[in-house]
Amino acid sequence: MLISGLLAFLLIPSGTVLATTTMAMSPRYSRSTILICHPTNRFMITQDEALKEDIGQFYTVLNPALGIVSRCEKDARCNILPSMFSFAGTYANIQSTVPNGFMMKIDSNGNYIEVSTLGLKTAVYSGVCKISKM
Image (cartoon, rainbow, N blue to C red):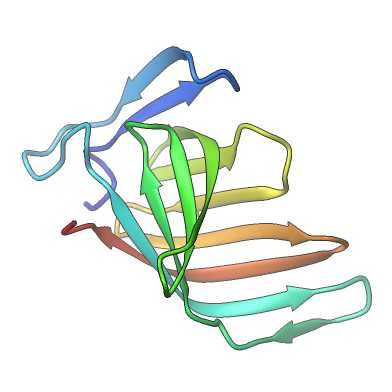
């Protein structure tokens, strides 16, 4: 189970930790576990249509210990989003702490779906998250 050993940190926008939650801990994971997520599908949705698009060359880095999500280009330029991590059953739920239209859900095998708004369009990504070897 990929996600089950992560700690979830609920953060207020100032970055102060309010509470933490844990799921069953596994020796493979620690508070500093970092996941890298690569999309395999992308759909762009407007009020008129939903189109499958090229996924581009980006990845998402999840760092629950710091409460951040980084959306990175292939050249390692990243946008950093302060985020909340919480768990419901076998799923990790992630959303930005500032209202910018980003949320993500990951299952215990590392499969994920991400929803981001881009203006009045919505991008829906799916793919797989793996433990970082950084």
